[in-house]
Image 1 (cartoon, one colour):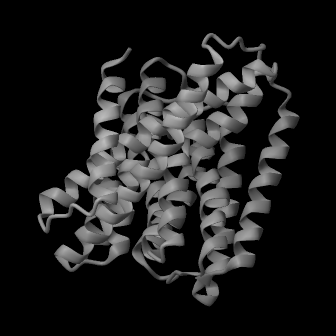
Image 2 (cartoon, rainbow, N blue to C red; image 1 turned 45 degrees about the vertical axis):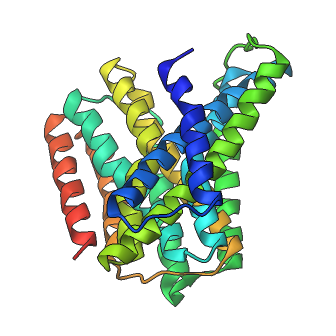
Length: 327
């Protein structure tokens, strides 16, 4: 058993005690601890959920590639889906959209920036094409918020866009080998249960922590969501892309960012819009950075500017983003 697996149960029980037995303190350190512990439980819960569903799929003879396009891809964006979904359902709409938009900016400027700064990245032949798709759905969102909000039917449009994107992926014809489940059905069920409860509890803690921090400092809720919460929910993408870049798996390093961003916009923001109308100012700082980052990604991949210099520029832009959202 891994060390982090041993920590998971105590961390999960601590969050349950804090959240559902109403043990709160008006300390800023407590609110930050709430986000940190919640982020850990959320990410580990997502990992368990993905592992359990992969093993379940393996028992039905589903190919590895199919699992990668569906279950694993869903798992990497599960933190964003959980946080934004709960935030939208509970009426914290600024956290809902701020987390999605902030995560996309973080994925491009920080995650892709670190990957490029570590080594010269050589994207796969599909990277530029997928970046066009990411830019298209980004511009679609810009169009949908011209009236200042995302509504139920806007969410339907975004979900349909994502479904079409996933359907088009199957035409690439990359089939993997059959996977073999190596754990028992009982352990698979335990992982699934631990994962789904961890995701729900961790997301709830992160939302409440973000709302309290925003209230404590008197800053906009969307600023905390687009920076602190977004960074937390982007940690799976950060670790995946960094390890992939170091191990020279360049296609994963870039594809992970683009695929996650498309899912965040199509599935996560779409689903959140179904739960609650989300007011969004088209001129807000996160939206402006979000559109700029989408255009920048397409330009970098088109020109093949994916070396260390580009990575350093992206990291500088991320620092500028974090500072600007609090102004």
